[in-house]
Length: 60
Image (spheres, rainbow, N blue to C red):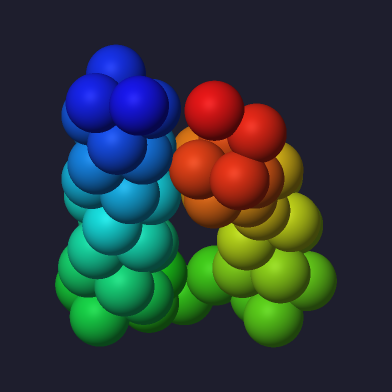
C-alpha cells in the first residue's frame, strides 16, 4: 500500500506543477496580443496534460 501512496503523491505533484505553469502563463506578458481563440486553444492543449496525473492518482 505504501507504493500506492507514493505514486499518488508523485501524480499530485505533477498536476500541481502543471497547474502552476498554466496559471503563470496566463499571468505573463507573453499572452498579450494573442487572440482569445489562441489562448483558448493553448488551454485546451494543456487540459489533457493536467488531467492525466489527476486521473492517475485514482488509478494507482
